[in-house]
Length: 97
Image (cartoon, rainbow, N blue to C red; front, side):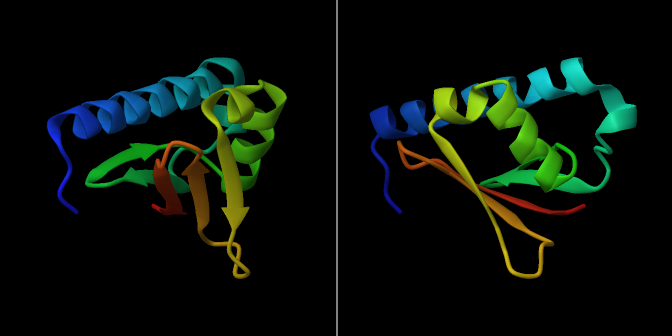
């Protein structure tokens, strides 16, 4: 995919916005209620610890971040991966760490 500099900047800003939103979950829930080692959020080549995909989905919805970030969380049938898709083209995959 050949992105122009403006598109790259917008995508990078969107990734940073998503990570900031997910960081709120850590502040609210703490590590005991959200096991960060269970899942990793992969955005392109970047990987961040998040937590259980189901809990992440629930907290994003509860905190209004899913709507704010324009995200939809979709779990695979196996339940071991989840896909975050943004309205503005940001895709992320939650996979077991």
